[in-house]
Length: 104
Image 1 (spheres, rainbow, N blue to C red):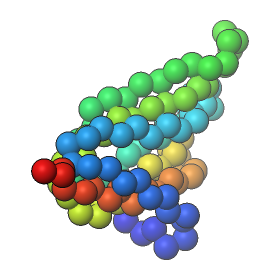
Image 2: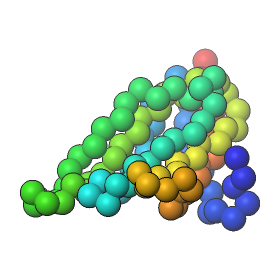
Image 3: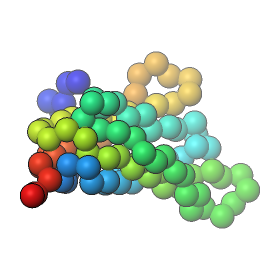
């Protein structure tokens, strides 16, 4: 994953803990966030959409991705905003996930 031209946010979490990333998604336009990550390091445990606009013609809201931190270390979590009719992404969000060993 090339993260050179995108601002990277950092998430720090203990191993086996769960964390959530919230992203705005406008499904009326055909937007969909697609995560890319190492499944050995992160496990997707939830993917929910909360519709926040109360209009029958609009389907937009907050998409929440819940991950479990599996393997200690530094890992990249990238989200690409895809449109149904395009091959390239509209936008990207990049996170550096620092997973700390569970304290004993």
